[in-house]
Image (cartoon, rainbow, N blue to C red; front, top):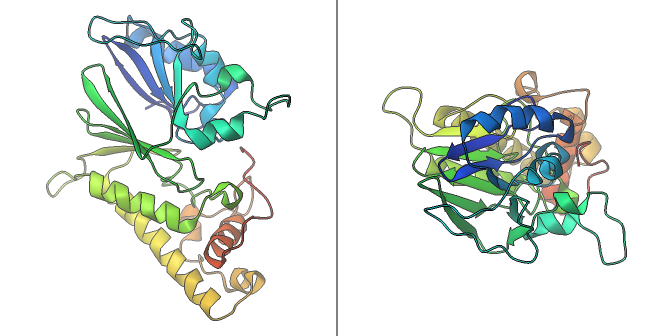
Length: 291
């Protein structure tokens, strides 16, 4: 788990090469390369993007061009015409590529070299790398394109922005995110994690941001999201407007842990996103600054 490069980065390294979940921000790519190069004699082969926020995809271009999808003794790679032999595979759900790219003839805000070149549009994509089954699950949550990555032998889950023990989930309603989707993702991970018997530990979870976590941390967060959802559902059922909901401070007891009055994702923005996702509104008035 690499921290400090934007979103947390998961690193799997071995005889086949290096696999990353997310690539951090572009400005930290040199530091990321410095950290991962000693871990394997083989190149960087895969980058899996858990969503399309810039603090998770910003390093795609810089890190991708340092990688090579070369054959190994245990695995052969079919390099398509979309993947140059001098570039790592960048994997994401299809909608992540859709938002990062642009229609023919139009300019994209994201360089083409940073785009995913190996997308999937089914519920699950599987890899076998470094002697380990790696399962990539599509889970619409903060957007319609989130992915959860399970490393089966290591017993590690890379959760992306679905789980962040330090702040409220960053829900992008405009791009298909919803509070129910986040809760569905947390419930799904609760079924995947196995705690150690009567102690901390067991399956480890690398969140999108924040500290390394386990089943107990996930349970606390899932309970918070459930309670906040239920409170706002009740307020909406009673006909309260967004302004009335904000004035009622439905997250007051959780704000010291997860809330913020400044920055790119405030408590008010979270409440607005939850309200609009539950009431059927399609957009928040302001998207997260990293998008």
